[in-house]
Amino acid sequence: MSQETVRSTGNGLIYTCKAHATNETDCQHIQAEIESIKESGKGFKIMERSKFKICKSGNIVKAGMDKTKTHQTFKCKDCKKRFISNLGFENMRNDPMVITRALRMYFTGMPFRDIADCLEQEGVKVSQVTVMNWVSKYSKMTAAYLDGIIPNVGNWFRADEVWIKVAGEIAYLFASMDDDTRFWLVGEMANSKHKHNTDNLLDMTKKKAGKTPTVFISDKLPAYAKSCRKIFGRGAYHKSNAGIRSTRNGVRGNRLVVKFHPSNNKMERLNGEIRDREKVFRGLKKMDTAIIDDMRIYYNFTKKHSSLDGMTPAEASGITVEGQDKWMTIIQNVAINQVTV
Image 1 (tube, rainbow, N blue to C red):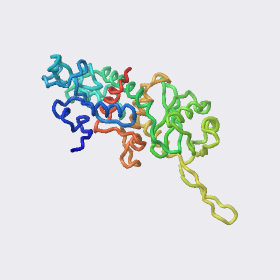
Image 2: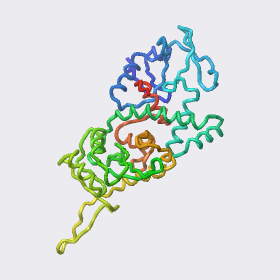
Image 3: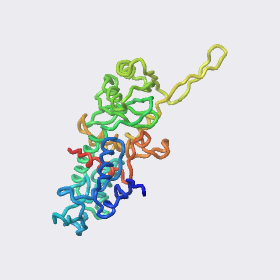
Image 4: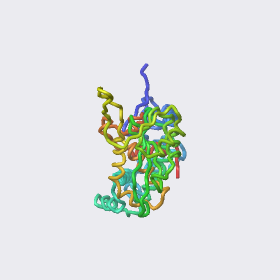
């Protein structure tokens, strides 16, 4: 007796049973796999809806293109209705691949107008307002879902701050990250650097990581030391550092002493990523903007790091996003879990 298994391909989940091979419907085995994905919260897989969502029939055939000539249309042979199977992009006029391409361009630092111009050169005419609406819609959807996933991080956390302009005024982005995986845990905005209370930052960091660190590394801003004692407790060793060297040599009597002195270079690299995308942050008009969350998603789930052997921080922390188009995968999984905005 052959062993039947569910496997993931570029076109979705495939099961080797007779029912799925005959009519390509989502059989009971695939439905069970989808439920497993929902329960685990960490198993991202490319999904393709193969059943008509109204009558739940898998007896479907291709029926040409839609009126815009951009989407494949299907016909249900049981209820005779036509539909478009585009999981996560229902009722969207443009092709899903165009939308995810626009998202990638936005998060690599391109302004909305430049994205619209680039797409027009490729034969897709959309306005910058349309691109802005895509970013707003899908960034909210993905943030709501991804924030509920707890990454598998290490026991050393880092924190730092970087200045950016909000409505023409200097503001500060306070951020925390995991030392092992470079996973950007939390980001929050503040009007001031030296007067800001970092209790909320470290409390959210603790909740996002699902644990308290054993070592917490930051610069010498006094707020970090106070918050570390209050939020992380005595079990967390706080090491503050203002320089970039990882060791510090000293002389005690006639002996050379080498003291452990961790740098905060990993956080400075994150600050550099933020600084490289100043064009994106020019659109900040208020302190509670969602652009910070958008940047965090891009950094964690789609940007590969050479220091992580080509993995993203999410992959390094055990969260796998399959497929070449990471945004497509994430949006499809959001749709499966019915996260809406």
